Length: 109
Length: 116
Image (cartoon, rainbow over all chains, first blue to last red; front, side):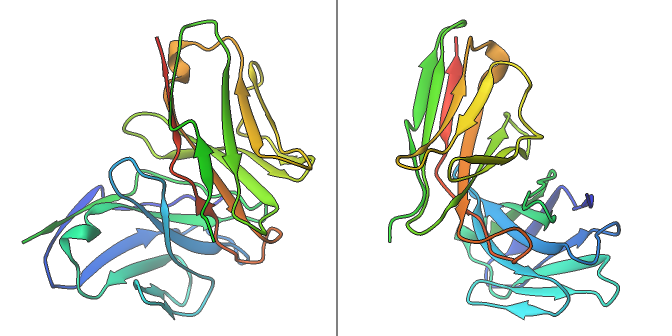
C-alpha cells in the first residue's frame, strides 16, 4: 500500500488560498488519492478525490502531478471554519483508506 | 437522507466488561468500514464488511474483537474483556459500491470508548 507524507502543520491567513501538499511516491496505478479533513474530534469529512486528472468541486481543487507521485489540495478562500487536520490517503484495491499523521491547518484572522 | 449513525456516542466500561458499538450506514449503502483512532493519532483501518460478509479484517486485533453486519439491522463492533488500551474513538464509514470504483466513504460521528 502507498505511504503518504504531509507536513505536520501549516498556517494560512483567512481569505487566502491554502495549498496543502502530499507526497505519495509509492502509489500504484489503480489507487485513487482521497482527501479528508477532521475538525476537532468529529468524524472525517470527505473533501475530494482523484486518480489522474485534476479535480474541482464546491469545497476544493485537487492538483495531481503527471507522475502521480504527489498532489496538492487547494482551498481557494480559507475561512476560520477550515481549521482542521487534513488527511491525504490512497484508496487501495481493497477499499481501505490509510490515514497518516495529516496536516494540521490553522486559519488565522 | 440521514448520514451514517453511530451509537452510543460515548461509552464507559470497566476493565473486563464488553463493549458493543453500533453503526447504521447511509441509506442504500451496503458496505461498512470500521476505523479506530487512538488519542493524538490518525485513523487506523480495522475491518470492512458487506451485508452478512466480512471482506477484510486485516486491521482487527486477533483476540477479543469481532464485527458483524447482519442482513437486517446495524453493523456491530464487539470488544470483549476490554482493557485500558482499547480506549479510543471508533469511527464507522459506509459506501455504496464495490472496491476500486472510486466512491467515497462517508463517516459517522464516532463512538468514544473509555475504559476505566
